Length: 143
Image 1 (cartoon, helix red, strand yellow):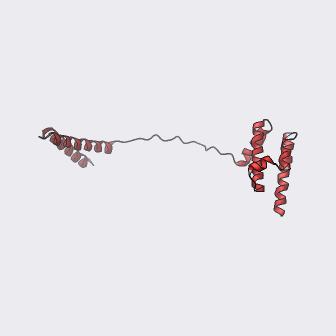
Image 2: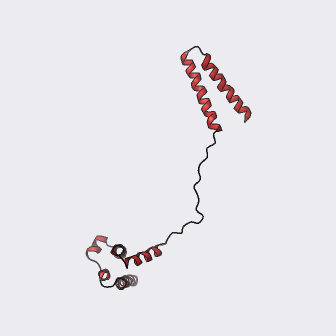
Image 3: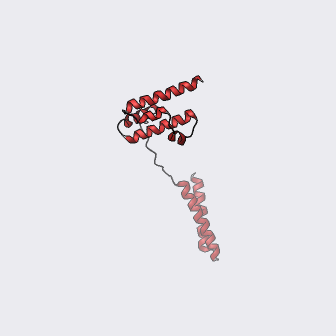
């Protein structure tokens, strides 16, 4: 490696000497450009670039599965209307898949189980709605 580096530096020195003593102005620029490219290559060969490593987490965070998300959503729905609306939209999507109908059609004419969702105590109405969905699934499986 040392001999290659010395030879490379000698070539650069010859090019710089040619740039200094060449008679023509254009020839001086050619020697100078070649010498500068050689020095740039030498710099890149010698440069050590250190990349910052991303800090790794000691313990990977476990992601919540769908069941835990829905459980948390139901807990929030018992307290506020926004979560209750989100849960209602999920139930509509479930019915849309179950009955193979568009969501807009189910929103305009909801099944009896979904109409029960907004009546009375939240947990009781949710239980009634889920029971209605369960009956619908069992009815479809029997057919």
